[in-house]
Length: 467
Image (cartoon, rainbow, N blue to C red; front, side, top):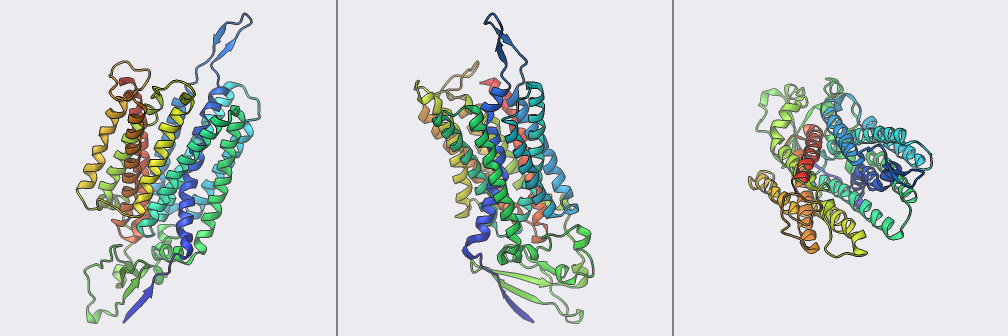
């Protein structure tokens, strides 16, 4: 029997907007937290005046170094745990629970702005907050990448576009704080209250998602939305969910045809909104019992994309912001106060967002192209280019690109390529496995994204020393 099912449309782009907000909500809190670095440095001031007006050096906390370390370690650890343990904790608990805890941590951080506290205790509380924000953020990000991987590829690009805009918001907030000449405490309150509002909006958007027909169609088809454990997915008394072997997202159908004497097998053609056809074959009981592929099996299919996303973020974090934030303008004066905010952070975040967003319009090279990993590796050229800009202070390398315009142009291409190739890697990976394994692929890719961030952050120390 031949049946035809029309895929529901994303009416008003509601699902696309929700995933954009979810992407924004995953990185907005941490981006604003980092933007408040001046406030933290002020609270941990390393000098004081004695009675005879001489400076007394106090304890050096190395705040930026510890912040980098304690943000990357839990990100790497918890994305790894999410990759392996996501089937044992329900999706609702992982996503909604993480958002609630992130909200509570930012409320605590905002309250502490007005609470007097000695430096030692403040430093300890802040470091603990950094650890837990990034731990819950890792679980949230890994779970959402797994969720969006079950939908058509463009929704992964939309999700990552939202992530890219988070950094732009933070950079604009930094510029407004500088322009208004607000004191560090007032600016910090704004930096911490804004993510609270953003996190609430993100939580509301996530809770709205299962009520939308378009999202429910794809999430139900994968047999995973709001499922408890893998065992529940494979129960023999659930023939509706487990009796369908979804075809690959390119519309292919496994090369198996039922024998006439083996019982009925139903071929179902589905039309997606973009006019493409997707075929689904209801197979025999032996095939119905086939569960999700193991993590290792999924990795074997997506290892090229895993390498690409790791390499992209390794190159990016190795010089941004550790090297780029120390570039100095050749035009002294008031422009000096805005130079890094505009030419480094705002330029990077806008172009990173553009690179992510353009993948919703076209994707080149294709996921099977050998040119794709070659272009990703070629981004390593940006490391020496940025190190040869007007970075101050410097001990070893000469300056070949002293002008502000040269630095800004290099930063723009560097950021655009980072966002573009990172987004393509994250979007392609879930499409290289069967729909039932898309969530595993998304969670695995989030781990390799975090691995790239951690590796890049570690390399930033020797790279800055070599300048």
